[in-house]
Length: 78
Image (cartoon, rainbow, N blue to C red; front, side, top):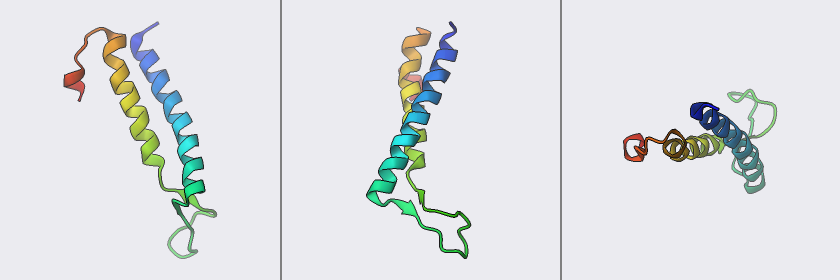
């Protein structure tokens, strides 16, 4: 299988799992955006930590890429 397809699949899976975990943690810790009816049009509270999931998925794929592609240029990716 193509190494880039594996990296993509791992990144998407990691992002999905982290989004679920971060959403749960955000609601549990109270790190949410509460709708006020004026500016915020969402109907219920929305966790504010979604960027953490994207950041985590990006870095998992970034550190996985050199080993799967075989080029070993991790310093260039960072």
